[in-house]
Image 1: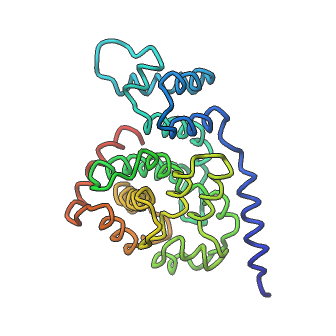
Image 2: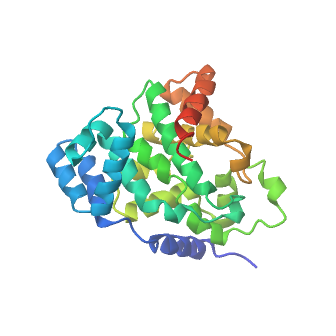
Length: 277
């Protein structure tokens, strides 16, 4: 029976937009943080309106601070963490539980989607450090959310009996073949529906595009962070699908990262995530 691809796409988008949005405080924080003219006072005022968010950020700041004095105020926490890390941590606390279920359609056990999300965000920070083109602080949050749409697409993929064949293909190739949309494009739709800044949405939606004049540095950084995270976590966390090596190589070239830096990217990411996962 022929598949109505237009209807399938509409159904997927409608399902994606039904995902519970981020808390209002987190969405507002994202918008203010990406406003270069916003002040520390404005940012801390938003965080202070959410006791759970405020407590988690203070806890994170204290865990990262090696000084003797306790970090007891939000403005001090902000100064220590910086805008990019502050936003990533706020979003991370809001999506943690959503990323925990197993996704057997992707070959992922319970918790592995979340582990890859965290590792990708860490890898994005490492990539940004090595890049000759600054992809921007939004890369950390975009990398954390880059696989978000797999939570929707998994219910539409039926790959039973074809798992071995899938290992030779990338996830986006299989998604486009079966449901005519991939997790990058659908993830961009979800993040826009949530009201996240356009720079984060673009980095998510374009991170599997590869060579293209319109692809921002942040999307290249997310693509590379995705690949680095897969290697840093090892084969057991990779799921059914292979990596798109052409996109990875293209992103490294765009960001000015030499191929011989690959092992350093992996090692630094592994060192950073060792105490987190």
